[in-house]
Image (tube, rainbow, N blue to C red; front, side):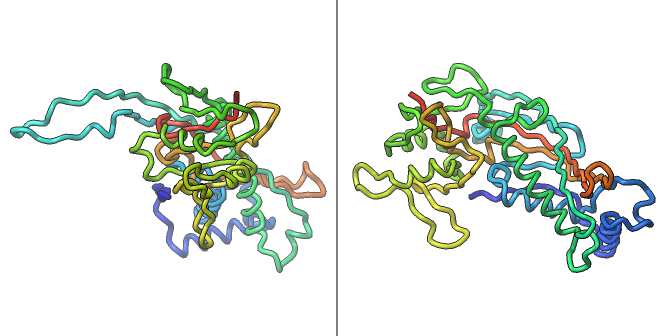
Length: 326
């Protein structure tokens, strides 16, 4: 799989990072010296960096998508659907005629995401517990859950625009901003090897190099049982070692519990295949603010963490869906 490369601000010095972390811990524990400036702080860079990296490691979509950090309230992405054709050969010291291109700009708005971890005073007073680690992990788990669901189902108004909020097309593409799809022919079932092959064939070859499957757990359970109609071999190959994903038809499989499940009552889209690094753009600010509230959730102490993040599909050609529908 393709590595997710992001640009980050330069790291602070070791001494400065240690001082910031010490102040942060003092704020969490109610140190009068660190609390005199109010009940809200910006968490140290080392903490926000840890939270960001940990979320990326457990959020399937974020792990695969392109992530860009910004200091602005939106990220402008220039898209050229013929970009891979914008090269050629020099003839007589002159470039060949320009290829046709379809250039447009998409602005990805950043939205406010929050997490509200709670602790008890006894936990805060326990010297054997690193309270900063406890709160960091709570923020990670809560934000990762909200982010991943938004990257799939978000409305694009108060949260990122999700992949599955876009319409699908099954034959020829007649409108922009739609995702190619293959129908299984019935609700709640994936029964044919050929259906998955058709999904692969719909993805343009320039995106196959780093393509992966994303699917729900029960869809994976069904697909595991499918065999190649010619060789009678299972098309699913189990991982041969820890850290190496299972493969389906030669491409890695990522299990995502937020993906729709197979349902015999309603049509669902339990499987996506594509190059998500090219398809989905995430933009976020790395700063995380933290508010301490010891009053409104008694007997708990509540911490209200916020950050700004957005996301949207920027290349619809790089994703294909399998739709369980008649």
